[in-house]
Image 1 (tube, rainbow over the protein chains, first blue to last red):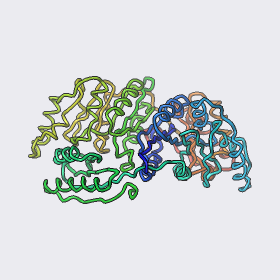
Image 2 (spheres, rainbow over the protein chains, first blue to last red):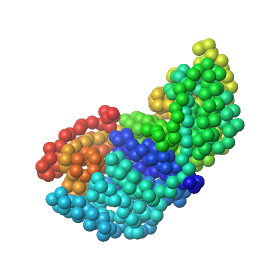
Image 3 (cartoon, chains in turn green, cyan):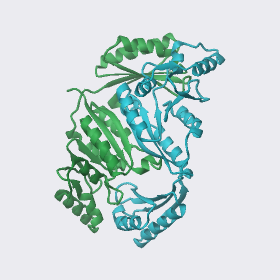
Length: 257
Length: 257
């Protein structure tokens, strides 16, 4: 197990920012990466604009080990992700010969015509590898450290799992949580700060359930399971000292969802 | 009605990027702004890191008319948003005198102690105005074009509505949609491109329901309702020409959700 690699997601689409569609891919990817010991450090959502996609992509791919994009790789005029990514990498868009064959085979097997619109989904930045998926004829693509995925959640998920072997796993972060209903977060904040100060190598997060008076969930996260355990035990003791019996939630991040 | 103002959201919190919590605030804000004729152009999610928050904030506030932040303004050690924003603006953090009084009043009225932890929620960047909310004692803050909001969805929503008068409304974008089940997106892509090319001032988006063969929703969006109508009528005619009777969805963006 090596140190954690880092990742970002770039979700592309007017429909996400107009409020028409609620994104599901970021949350899925976050859990998937966490299970594999990869830290999702940033997410960006941009509209269907070539320059905005390119600027965000170049900022993210220079900074993180992996970048996943979501959306804009279909057959219609508003699917401009491949073009924007090619432009950001300074390479032309080509019809990928293997993608062409995959799409021909997919539609021919269904007795459907291989139209120019469908062949649009064989377009990739030059130098890209394909991310094959069984659900749709159209592959995602991988170029350098960037994975270009469909936006439709079912296909996004299949594509993410198709690149599992490309991702270097790191230390899995262990997470332990304690929830005390009706305990105001502001009542437990001093002990939390003391516990955080005393324990190195563990990160303690405090999440009010709904405002300050409905209760609080405290989460201790660490690559060292024993340390996460030790921290949450201290948190639980502090909750009890304030007169609230916590509910304990034992889990690795990988057991979540 | 003036031209559309632009906005961005900066959501802050390890729990969003670890997959522990699914964000609800971006989607809410997107719909809320769309109803008011303000274009949400970008969203960023960053971890609880002073420098990452500051860098994202400075990039967004220079580029868009309004920036909304979400998360990290509670009473605990991991709530560092106020500090990060003050640093990004190059101003010190102060105890805001009005916020102090509000918090004193809120907790005293409940017979609760006004602790140092609770008073932490009266800390603001120097020069900030308060965003009062009735749900919690702790106000959000507004500094220049940045609105600093709680991450808890119920409080975020109350705070967003509390700044309604600070937001300059613009042209509301009218949206009309047509959905044809089982019509592959790749079958309608040529007519869509032609309609998009023929009609200026309308934006046509195409959203496959789940892959290419489950059907497609096409959305026409325009500040001119008549134009959106004209575009979606053309789309519906194209769907019928392919042998699929569309379901029509008539709505302004404001009628959505």
